[in-house]
Image 1 (cartoon, one colour):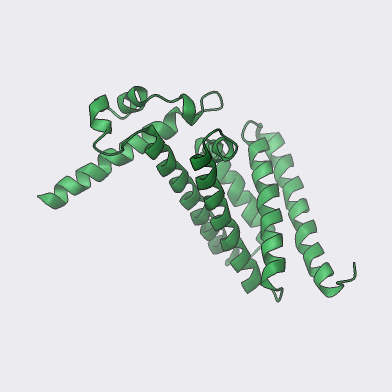
Image 2 (cartoon, helix red, strand yellow):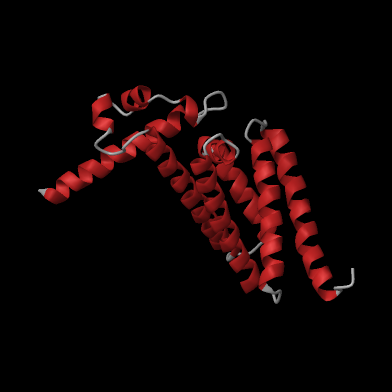
Length: 204
């Protein structure tokens, strides 16, 4: 019976998380969400919320953790697609843009809270971005003969450009998103080729 209760509790917790994500939009950030409205969206009484989260702050930090996990899973999906052949950069950028299109609210959460008023939220977002960057760094190092520092600098630059492009793509139409994707692919190729060239010619 305890196993069934645990499953039900996790299901309800998931409903609360999904309800909060559903209420995020271009106009409404997490700081504007109310506990009562999130509970209502999840089909729960407001008092039931506290069986799963201490407060909205804990829910927000959980959402940030989930967003970071989703990003890292995204990279793994991209690598699986890369294994079937094709341009590493092109496939990675296209996969990321597909994520933006399908999970705009998740990405908006990261963008907003990274520069938000809560130091705790900013630290949580920056931690997730560092995890994402380190995973990309490890991949770059395994795919090249470059040292760790060069790969990390590369990964850091790639993440900055991709996140900026993702922010621009959030409210873009299909034609604009294609243009952003094409431009981002070129920019990332500049960085990757530049890193290889500088490594070969350190006096530049």
